Length: 382
Image (cartoon, rainbow, N blue to C red; front, side):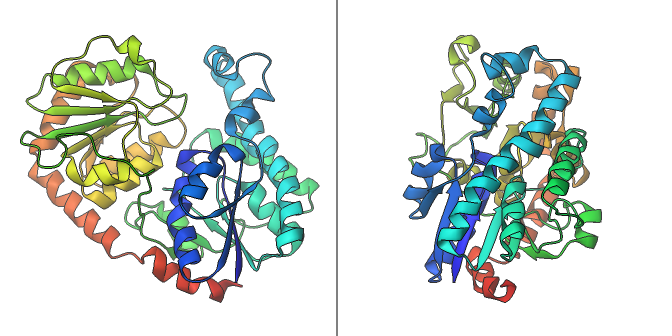
């Protein structure tokens, strides 16, 4: 069977699809993965055939701004930012993916298209070509405020294409759902044609930092993700709070934080630009993070308590779900102080009730179908 996978060119959007794509290739299917060229090296390392489609998210924002997109995003008001985000994810990215995927589909003639649900251009292109399609989630289905702007732009573009009806974000297609049902949106679980899939972390291969395996003191992992939402001052505040505890702190600064702006860090803090997160999580005792879907799902799977410091987008609803499930806590806005981070982290490291809830959720994840099992079901959806 010929399969085309497609996602936005972003770690948080592309990585969740890789386990199923690799499993499908292992099952003997002809697999192509279409996204912007910046992520082709990742796909090639995974042993997948990469094809060019779409723009990077940075390029999409650059098309809406004169000058440096990151600087313009920092200067824009909340209202201006919401409108631009709506256009980028509801028009600019889908429009380019529709154009590029249309050419690819004509050449490859796939039997099934599996599109990451943030990439609505994938389902629009498949619907235009009359090819069966399946959505693939990257976490909990969110109804954050920005989705209103995105949905408005998407609906307008869909109407221009002659596409109507279908629930968002699946557009009426089957949906590969990597979120455990107990923390997924109840409304979505009730109405969607869900195909559960165990969230399997994916990281570029690499060695774990020294001291991670067999550490003696509690190990706290701190990350604010890979997007420009990452804020050095929030990271610095969290470092100060965590360093006050009798723990070791491993910080993944990511590509968006100027490490020099953090200054000198305490002796029990280690800064790393990148870590193989999926390999790291089973070894840590607490994750302090921004609420990105990849980190949230990874912590669910690894059975690790979470302290969530959301910065934007679906991170707030992820933080809410973590708190509601009893597997962690959240700090919002001005409540993110060094003292608050210290106190919440101390409590989470010692709370047996949280530890019990974490184990229950990890067992739920372990009971979900594997990528290999789901790959075996894909022919049923053609």
